[in-house]
Image 1 (cartoon, rainbow, N blue to C red):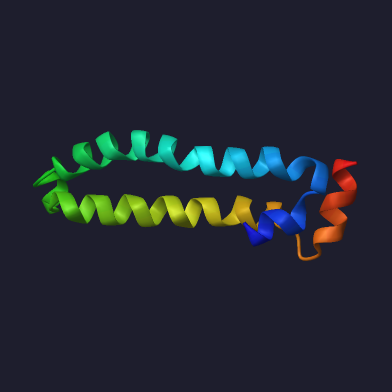
Image 2: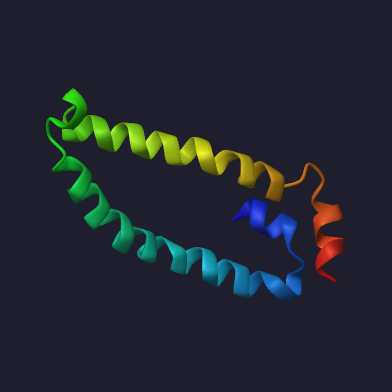
Length: 84
């Protein structure tokens, strides 16, 4: 929330915070069945289901790191000016 408040002008913050808070229940709706499917992959490629869940969760975090770093510039004022 702090990073979002630093990156967006005051007139956009309510909408951004709302989208951020709304994304959490939707993420649970998507990841619950996905995790269940991954846990059911017992024995695929010699790995347990929990190992598949661990690997793919970590892989998604690694793949999303680059876009996140590109979105959050070092200096928040530069990003705010682009939204005006």
